[in-house]
Image 1 (tube, rainbow over the protein chains, first blue to last red):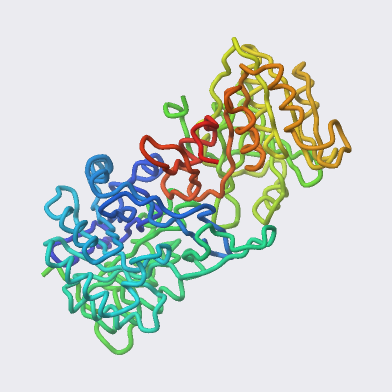
Image 2: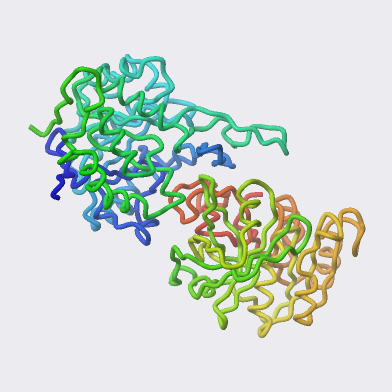
Length: 315
Length: 259
């Protein structure tokens, strides 16, 4: 049984397998390196990076919900200069395919980070985060309006040759419309979904549980929503999709591939099971084989209605 | 210290499940790795929920390769944990974080614990007893909830108890007995663990007098420093910054923190 799990994406971005650490749950890598074989991952999307340091939101920042996790971290990060000096070298040494998740309060701030990352050795791709629900200015508001999403992606495209994916919010009526807007602005890929906006109540203190009041819901609870968005977006655009939302097993990965994703990101489950991404990568060939697929590529889009699977980039 | 120490994902069998007070349980578990812990460090325990539960070590027995984990049942995760029995195996990350450094043997030493904050102080007392003998102040809501008083007495230590309802020891919080202690030992050192308002009061009471170290509790995500959920506001070089309770803490010098 030889199952090809490699993934070819636009602008020459190739992954040895489709399992990428999702932004925000994996820090910049070193903390998990004790538990995770980082070099064996398909890639690592780092915690969101802004031009200047961001302090993040008040605590509590996490709250457990049924089959889910509500978070309001607020994109705390040390800023792009510190990231490049202190954090990127570690991941580069691990031979990780590093995807830099970029964030900003304004279009210009996104462009600043994108420009700074361009030609930086060890940066393989950018993920434009226009979908974080936990910041007041910018963030998700860019991802909820097709014109603003277009503007951010356009500004990023003008300053970088790197493969760029845009991370979509599920907190919109038609994710496909946002996807089309960023595709038109030059996005190479879509990653979806970011977290769903939610609220938890702390009964004991009679107030919202999170310091940031609302938070972003992740974990298995959101998997059906994520699959629906991937399925919808796959029929709306011609660029590859990186799917995520509640993935915890290799069969979950296959579901996302069938719904139209070419690769996936894995996040929340890592908090419970630090080694899970490596375990998924090990199990994936067997799962693909069991269901009659000779490669990851073979499975992509097979659940989409009456159309051939979307072709990957890389040509 | 903890930076050079081992921390692993271990499968550790439960040796004993003890009810120590109403809604309070201590699990004794067998793990050579965890028994390398410093007092104040914690175990991050897998439960059926989405997040592991951080519990600090109540006992650290290197000789027998065992540790104690004492906690209050406050929700589904801790209830599940309280129902685990002898022979069952727990999936634990640890030991994690930075614990209590050894006390300065030339200065008087006091331990101030509130509620389920007492256990890591017992671990500290047991570990450092050969260097220094602490005075112990334990606070609880009511007499039944006073934790580990006998354990401290078994170490030969004097224990002062304060209960909110006056059913044991002083009526009121730990702050009354602590103030008395601080007046007698203004150059002392205080290790404290308990609810955040108590720690804020201890920090304020010690300011300009004793050196205070506090072990914090915070809602935690990954437990190893990646997710930045369990942060606490601290005085940075130029301006305020967040530090991670799971990594830079749980034990901090009280004066580092912004209360």
